[in-house]
Length: 222
Image (cartoon, rainbow, N blue to C red; front, side, top):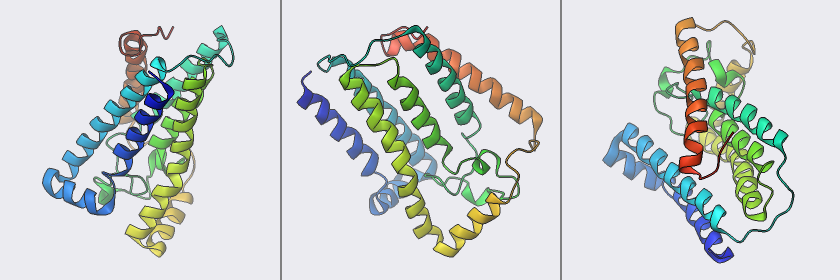
């Protein structure tokens, strides 16, 4: 694949992530598919485009910038375990600050969970995933891939905040954000069984990713 082809996949990746969430287009899709259907469809599209983008980076011209060292993989493993745990404590929990909005009306500011630590845990997990993968992938194509996705995740926070301020109203958004900020950073969970189950799920996903990495990506993760 040429650099032009790689750039084309990048453009397609960003288009498929930005167009469906435009207010007018999203409203039409939600009306047809429902909130849950839209969320599932958008997630599937995102995963497919991400897989295509990673594949295209591996097919782009190889330009080595730095060699891979054994310690770099250990950093990736630790970072990915943290990212999996963040996602485990995020999925299926209401978060009025983030994208989607499913079940946001059931969000309890008195028990914000991981939202107290970060309003956008999915973006934090994505930025962490991209950041740690830069280390062992010292070629130009993968630096562009993971570097751009990391910046995309960080910049996405401001974009989503702006959209949520518009949807909730500036005063409503600030009031809710202030209320959540006043809660302790660390506190006992509402449900220990649920928390332990999510920790187990995070480790299970991490192990599954290690096993599937050579199958899906074509490179051994260990």
